[in-house]
Image (cartoon, rainbow, N blue to C red; front, side, top):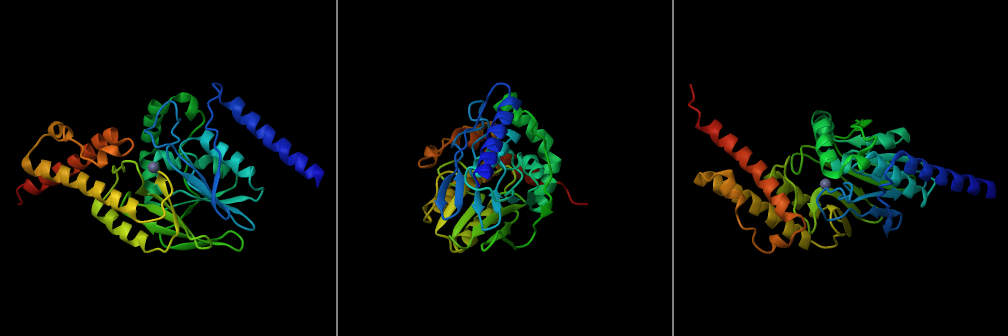
Length: 322
Ligand SMILES: [Zn+2]
């Protein structure tokens, strides 16, 4: 018993030393899990854009401990993050980390996949997210490196999931059933959410942003709004958004809904008036949206992508039909 404990401690020490040695400039996320319900833990991301200081640690990740295994929620932005996650989970339990659900393909959620695969974890994604990760992953990795710097990203490679989930599925982690539900074509073509029946906790991924400006580069806003109605009805007590603090009532849904309407309306009206993108980007962000974290940068990004999509549709519609 004592020998077993000693081996575990030594393993942990060597893992930490190995991680520290691999990253020469000693950048560290210093991840600490917070228990939010029985056996349910969250690593809270910062409400910031991607920066050299935060190393891409901007999204919430987490894990659920069953009687015979652990299920992980999202894999973080880099190999280093995922390795720190695994080490932090080991401070809570020695049960195998058998499952990792990647809610969608964006860098802050999907770029730690390789570390979990090395750990013999089954990694699950929606098939459309898997395709987008393969197609856009290398470019997104380049952007990420520019935004957070090389030190954080050392060793990070785009990897693919081991299993695909297109329809609702349950995973048994030992006396505890976790439901995985697809919500396609809203925030991205292939989002997954994770529901722990036992504690009525919902990990909503980036279908829910709380206190931070939502991102829409792969979004269909009207379908996303429909998804929000379904999410509300799922019967949760506690919701962990992809970004922002814990949610226990519907107020953050109203905040998100009205921000998404505002984005869509601003882009649609500008294109209809024939405004240029430059003119549209000058739009003043009204209260209360101007209070959202990262709103200045995200508003520019979101309007640019919505505007270009609408302009392309407008152009197609104006072509003569032969
Ligand atoms: Zn995100």
